[in-house]
Length: 344
Image (cartoon, rainbow, N blue to C red; front, side, top):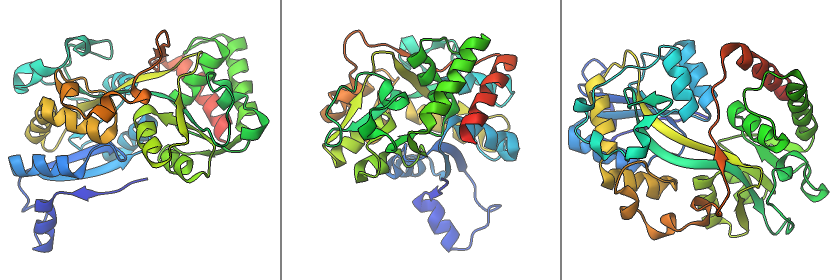
């Protein structure tokens, strides 16, 4: 899915017949779908006199593919997940900045400064922190949902009514957790088991879709679906029968980040936007809209209570998640083959 949002100022310029060459002060954002409010974009636009243009993608892999296909140089910032930041760095897709270029750099929660995918935060800032698991319609199924078997070996009443993300990294990571094998394994027996499990599970899945995940559950078109916990919070507000699960085998833990892209056409405005998002008030507004945890100090104290206290954002004690790992190239090629088999 791809959509375009423009600020009020930009819309007015277009109505007046202004050309791109006449527009001074643009910001071009490549972002996940339905992940930032128009109100916050308008607030930035009005504060800085910058016209905001945003296109969207539905997975980390879609982002990478689009940039490789020639979109690098069209956008100023993007919002990749943790492992994708590392991949994009390796591909030479990111610019760097000095902390002094972001007056609010000190607002980054200390635990999220020295991260292994961007040590010291030279190309990125934290955006939102969440989990990927699954959600179940409890009117359709009232049994135990505490295992990834719901996705990969579902009970008969759920078979054929499952939506999974069209996201290689997250789906293969969850399948690996279910089988109890490491991510980025090069063991042939483990890779065969992963491939066979996914092909068998696929027979029970009705659809692959990240951008339809909330809608098909809310509408009842799917009884089970992979889900981001923040999306799950929003889905439950529309259908109280939906319950987000934290499976015993584990779940994907992730951090999305705003990155400064190489050859950004509006680098200074990109840095203004990144600094804007490091204001606790603005970071809290992202959490209120998207339903995730902020990596900015003081932001969650300003977030709405129904967000802070949501069960989707508070895993049971003892439940643990895993970051999706970035594999070395030779191993990644093996996982790419498995994914190709699954998508045939």
